[in-house]
Amino acid sequence: MLDPKIVVALDFDKKEEAFSFVDKIQPSDCRLKVGKEMFTYFGPEFVKQLSAKGFDVFLDLKFHDIPNTVAKAVTAAADLGVWMVNVHASGGTQMMIKSKQALKPYGDNAPLLIAVTVLTSMGQDDLNGLGILKTPAEQVLALADLTKNAGLDGVVCSAWEAEALKVKFGQDFKLVTPGIRPAGASSDDQKRIMTPEQAVAVGVDYLVIGRPITKSVDPHSVLQNINASLLMPN
Ligand SMILES: O=c1ccn([C@@H]2O[C@H](COP(=O)(O)O)[C@@H](O)[C@H]2O)c(=O)[nH]1
Image (cartoon, rainbow, N blue to C red; front, side):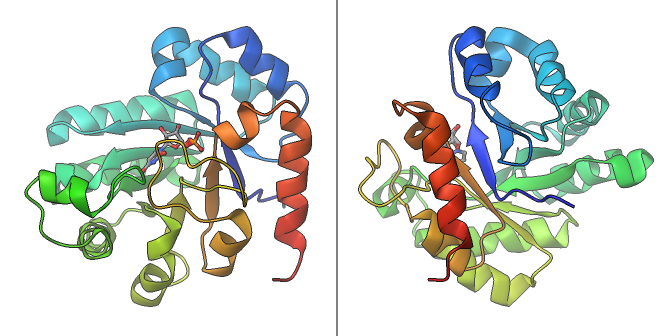
């Protein structure tokens, strides 16, 4: 069975541009991530259109609210038929437990439920600004611990934390990492970055990549080249 590792962040403000990209690729090349921008513009119908083309969709809305509200939002995502959905681990244990319970009726068809730890755009200064004195790695570990204990399937983190998380939580605990940048690419607003090849080598399960692919002059070739690089031994 195909299990593409790349999840392309479809952050476009025009549906036509997103479809022009999607029409050049296959579900065997990558999965697709729909985040706040495209979901706010184009809604559930857009997600259904991507699924109808055969793509697994990661609905990256990072729910963060009281347990009842988040559990219902996660249920709505499951009804939409997405492959993966996420919440913020900092929403707390009860919020995560209730969200996981909400997916029970879906059995094997439930989406993977993962939790965001520390955004990849944040470094030590950003954490300190929030009054958090732990290092990003320590804070990720603490939030991943809450996530694992709440029974979720994995976390969103940076590839920098991947090795330690796999050692502590095991191979089945999924690691989904944005902040992936091919060598030489601009880091944009990302702070904790790693190349696709290095990220796979440290145990990342799914690589979220947006602008380095979608803003390039030949996005399809960039995607193919990254996929090819993942097959080569380091
Ligand atoms: O910690 C996080 C969580 C989510 N994201 C999302 O991933 C993509 C990254 O896009 P790039 O263009 O490759 O930077 C984007 O949709 C973010 O909302 C993240 O970057 N970091």
